[in-house]
Image (cartoon, rainbow, N blue to C red):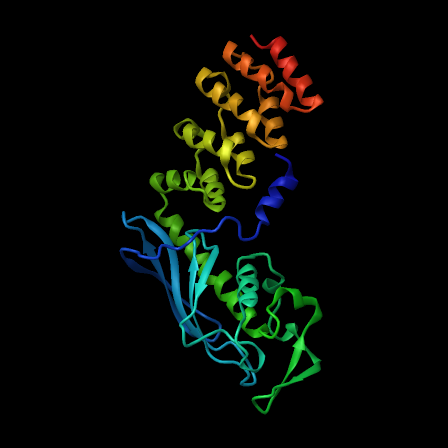
Length: 313
């Protein structure tokens, strides 16, 4: 696969939403982490109705601001099984606030969730001191204090007026807790979880499960792999097609499934399928399908398919 495609996949942001189970059967403490201010936080693993791991969550209460300009933050955080941020919820009486205790607006919550979901945010490489331009002062209207302005280099990476809150929450969400979540999931990872992730509609799970399929056992997961070639999210189909064993292309049943996809796939995946059919004996039914799909292809693709039709036996 093209390395640019791989990089684009790895740098994706929020992706398909994964909504935490609203009515979990049970939870159990997975581990405990300590924040930078020595606040102890327990992270729970939440299970579904059929007693399968669903997501992780934590109730966090921590100070995030300096100069007495912000309230204590109370927030419920949610991660998927791989440590990716998915959502947060707030107590009704403890809203997130910005400079001068101004409450977050809807647009601020949207921006914050997008920031928290971005593991490659510039916030990763900045400490709090380097985020503030102390040459520019902002004076609070509600307390007797001043604070520096947000550094221009990081301005787009934070919620306006909520620099400290954004920075602290990003590091809570994407720091030690996220790393331990992945470790905890990997410790209990098995075939059932692998299959469920392959069958999910969530690209983080799809891709992770693909990386966990043993090279010698790909045939065991053929139905799931073929499904992901046809309908996987984002760049998952490119990874799934690479996992298909060579023999599947000569298997009449799977050959038909793959050929039938060509008319509905995007241009890049059409090319993937067509190129992989080169040198493969084609059944009569597969040839018939390829003839019918010719009008939907580009001139270059048609030339390749016509060559397949002539040489395939």
